[in-house]
Image (cartoon, rainbow over all chains, first blue to last red; front, side):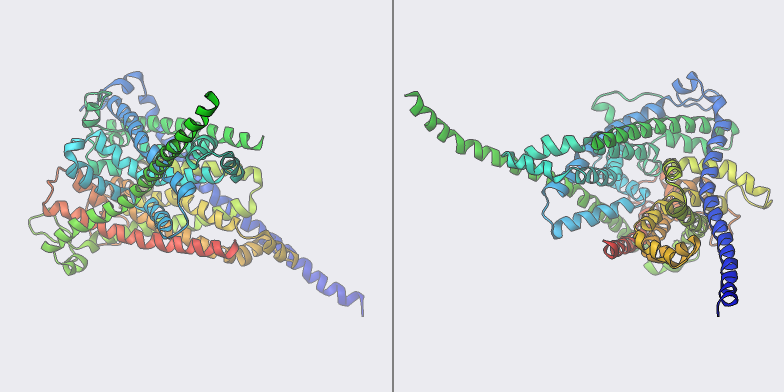
Length: 305
Length: 311
């Protein structure tokens, strides 16, 4: 009752295993093709934009104001507007966002209120950006127009600050969570007050993580278009904003809006401009992301050592 | 003399500085609480603004008409406000996007979590993050000037503005969202479950499809729901590539207008506050907000449940 009876199932086993192996390989190929698909589209997109717009990039393009004639038009006011908007958004969103994260991580006692704030932030992160545009239009452009001056940089950056705040808060909380509790306990044991512990021990330790999150949030703000269309960022701006409080209350434009405007026109010349402006925008975002990655890597290296 | 004076002075000073100290701590506590209340105020502001203008709108246009009318012509003399027209375009473009994003996103997640060696994973994840970081206006450009001409070689009758191209590109845009959230869910499945299945002689495909995917199901569904919410709220791709022609249709080859594209169209013109036209964008925004809110809450709940399962 041995040899034939045991080899029979073994042969079937081998066949089944071969079939399994084939299926396994097909499955792996399918999954890797799916992964490749996204990357191929990404490459196509970048190549398409470079092909369409790279030849249009020049110093003149960067330093000219918009124009009716595509070959004369440039992105100076849009580029400066984007940088201006990014900085003012950072000034508003950073302290409030980090303050919220500190409150939730270091101060709030677990309870109804803390839970409400947390659920609320999670939901805000999922609200479509155009809804923030409606909020900004009604509150910052209309109701608070004596303060903001209407469709201005200030109205735009207030709206953008609210939009990116959840990202800053969520990233900062992660950074605070990563600070070991022993550091806090050590500080408290030495007689430091809660704020002293937070400001001199926790915040410095978490700062790289906080900054990384903030940079990524600002990158999001720089690429955002819809809410600023709602706010009424103009496309034809032939002056640069003053770097002053009054400068905050001037009309503005940003790169994505300029791109949207050029893409929507029928003339091919403007499409070329849109591609070239897209390259500038992508370059700008690449810089910000690189900064964030360097910061993150340095931080991780720090923690391991 | 000196030794006697110092302790007294110290005793005198100590409580005062403690009071100041305490006050400062209280003030900082208050300030931080004020910071976190900004997020509550934001939600309150969004709901307040939307409700206020929507109520004003519904005073002129009955809710029943808004929901059941089959025409959307707020800018014409003969005004009709059937939000279903805009919703049909939103459903069409989102549907196409999800047909692309859900399967490809999930397979990508499986590849990253179950198949790819660590090294490939470390390279691929940032690459997908780049895909997620490209501004939506750039995807709009790509849809209008690259994908639509490409589609014309397959469907010669396709219009320059259409739902198909916008939907497809939007789908690619959402792949990273589905991939990264589903991957988190797959990655969280305990290794012991996989080991057990392998020990029973299962192949990798079997382990993945019959053990890991079911175990991670609620997390995966949560990522799908978020993808739906994201597609519904997406604005620039559809505003650029799908058109501004409100039309009750599910034909992907003709120009249409989604809810978000309508809001953009109206705000591009200088619409005075208080007019019916101004109110319509808030009514449409309200519908959009409610749809995404329900989806986001559902997704959040699923993730919470999933966490409890494995922690």
